[in-house]
Length: 291
Image (cartoon, rainbow, N blue to C red; front, top):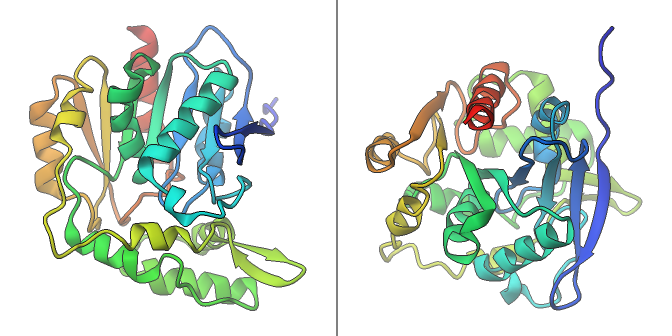
């Protein structure tokens, strides 16, 4: 008999400044380490539904919405859409959820948060999956993200939403089926009584737009190397313009236990929905369990 697909529970918490924060909670606490999923800059907890449904058979899996994304509250002060404010939010939610140690899966900005935790709460980390992000961020990729986040045209139908998604990501995602494009579009937009809106506060671009890309971006090798006590799985999209093959190779050289995995036909950031990538993450987590 096929096991029923687990259903996530939406849980809400209160940030230090009173803002509502949302988390999707899959499965139930077991003897196994929980998995904490952290999304990208303009993404949300729903990005991890496919992965979480597979992992939740054996452990608790949670996925967070940063402030201004998904079901978390929009911040009236866009300056709070900041890595350090968000990192405090993550710690607040995980403490309230009773998670004191976990395996982290961080996509893009979520990977940066995972590295920052080595300075704010290193005891939380038992293993880290860095999805298309590393200590060096390529300027080309950052410029592309700046070009569209908070600036997407408003679709009038789901078919148009898919076309918008393809227009932005199509050059870097050459192997996606129509089902994947539809899923990506539905995780980017939502249809309300007033029409289509993005699942994030467009004001996050005000904060991200403050980054001066004409100046060198500081590398985070110190934070990455602080992950040395725990296993790392570094995933890169074959067509990524944010994480270079050179940086990926250097990550495996600098870390004593860093596996590298490349997702063919995908760019920044891999969707974590295809079978080979899901199996690689499952195998990585199983290795941590065994240790």
